[in-house]
Image (tube, helix red, strand yellow):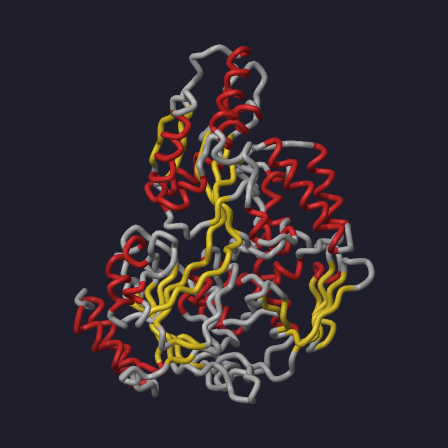
Length: 563
């Protein structure tokens, strides 16, 4: 391995890791570490066009690093493909009658990856409750500056141990300030994965590229901007129903080709085993008009989808300052008319090949105890231009035209949707412009209230409607929180607190529905559609699971040999 590592370093300096050079490096590394790179049935390959910024779970804030972190680390609990919480490092968990004290009882057979250079981890050691406490407290350390510190906001920092205690080697107790029903979901995020103190202290800031966990795979090598290779953890604790050790795969190879067209070609040619999401580079070729996989690809590929806990929407900055002139988008009736003037079904069919679900609900229906049929919306809310024109005409009697232009802030990836809105709202007699800016500039404008109208999406961190409805609580005003619209409603806030204090799940969901309806009436945002998790998978891949939060689970994946 030392020779291979030196070879990689030299090649990187000469900047010639392309084509056959890269192939030679990958084969050399896989072979040197005991994996036969020619056995494609044992190596799973995919491309990550967005690259990776870190493999430290404390900084796993986007899906790209989450997918890799989930292979390297374990947390106390996990979320399965049915949005149910399952034990992971914790073989069981319980909540006391106050709704504030959680206890997690750990397994006694979980070991960290064996790392020769780290004292204490040369043979791997047992993971204990003290590692869990260290890992969670690390998120709160201001010197670490983790983007995941917020998952512990509900923990009572004034309680003994700062609210996180190791009662024994195998018991962790976490005390909350007050009941917070979604807390288990927070413990299922990648941020809550467990790390060993020895490795973190040994590598320091370089732990980002030298991750050590208890997961089914461990890092073999990561050459930034080129590729990342994971190897099977031979001492992983999980077993399948027959008692066979997981994972089945020997290695995972991740490429970093930024060109989505190249990724698509790699999938077709069998160089990649799956591809996630839709992109104009291949969407029209892979999908037919109904959003199904084109028959021409059925021999090699299959389409795996599940409703995504994600909502695309148009947001409005609704806060009024004293002395401000009247602005049309700050009038609730105008916002409702704008919503009614959108033909979501046409946008879904023509711009997204039917692969998204038109909606008038900001919260995905599954989180409200409803099924997908509940996405059917009223005529007032979708494609009813006559109703919209009537509303706008009534408003014009109070506020004569000309009105200020409606300017939508967006990024280049969504200009097609904004252009459709520009046309449809133009049919209502409104002048609309589109301001296309970089992703960084767009985030800054939205967070600071400089964008009056903006296209944005919200992706759930955990499967609870609170995660969506929290965008409208007055205490969450941006830039310190996600309430980008600066919507404020005392009754909504009271309902929010009621939902958090309710111990009965059915009562809480009923309150969530009322809150979602109240948002629909006030319309600080216009929901457009709920996305789908969309995976294109090679037919030789089995054991594939599709999660509504789009996590990647490779533990039970196998590949049939292609002859």
